Image (cartoon, rainbow, N blue to C red; front, side, top):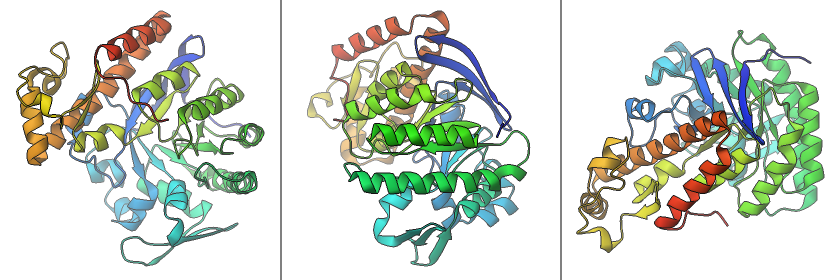
Length: 379
């Protein structure tokens, strides 16, 4: 089945790609990092700061939004953009991650997932068709198929069962999405855990079904970084070159560099804001833990050459004080500093790919990280 193409590939450098993804609410420059606002808000940040930091697109979560305030209510209020005040593209995760993370509160069968709401215990049914319906009510530019992923490590039989179920749900989501207005997109999600043949089977089947873009899901769920990157390297070449490739739930700056080197275009992760709320700043010289006592008397900013005001103008001593005192301002400043760093990294990567200097950028970036703390790893 053929679907319209909203993605333009502008340049490549090895397997690394830069492009333009056109949505009903604006253009997304790729590679793109999507800050996570699961419940329709960015924790500790105003949308203005998210946009000024360089974000083209943000992520919301179908599961959380359908429970509170409700998809029908958001639709009546004009959709996610009007409801939240974010005037750009939005992608909504279908709720598949909650299938895994809320295992004590759900039951899965071929029809879909039955949840017990973590808010009030109410019974909630989420079928592939309902997942698409909810995302259309939310008016998200990019909807995701409903899928099941398993936490790794897991038995091959369990991984294969979840992968096959996700494929059946993918077909149903694709049919349910056929009446969506022009310009809106649905992405399929490759599953298969850390088993290469299952990943390959999933990818080929999804391409046969036909989606506007393709995500690699079920990673960053407990496996070492090397396993994640090996999986990406196996799967990405099987996905259409003229469609965006999205690695879900990833990751550290090192994860981004390595995944882009393997052909990934889109990412989302809570790390920038979550770490900001816990006193960790991502900088050009690696991560800086502002809880550390050595910053108490340090008048230097995190990076005096940064274009982002809070990174350039606020002293480490003041950030340390805010974090230790539990002041909300500390979490806000560090969250915006981190989002700005991630978006600056993405902008530099896009520019380097366009110039054919991506390898040199990676080498320079790692050399700068080595001047400070070692870049965080997931394994």
